[in-house]
Image (cartoon, rainbow, N blue to C red; front, side, top):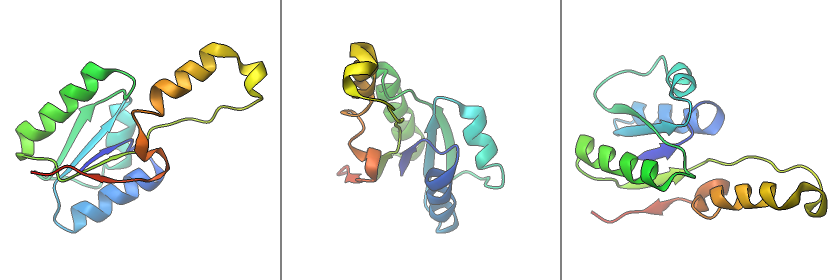
Length: 119
């Protein structure tokens, strides 16, 4: 399983559940220190951490390549990346909206949708 944003909350919880169930797990985040800290009680060969900013296509491709090199395949990928945009569309301006949509379309799983990648 590859899961993006394991620094807290549901991401860290899913990581723990998967690892306790014997699954292999790749935790990705922009801030790897925070992800490592959130999963500091989880260790072993089944856990890997890779840098990933979902708005950077080359980092996304690199994270997928690293995951496949490490574990042979990806069975499940979840992207929990996102952030809140507060305020009216008219007030936030174009930059805020473009930044939001750079993250959201590549992150279909922002609200928990999971996809299966066939072997």
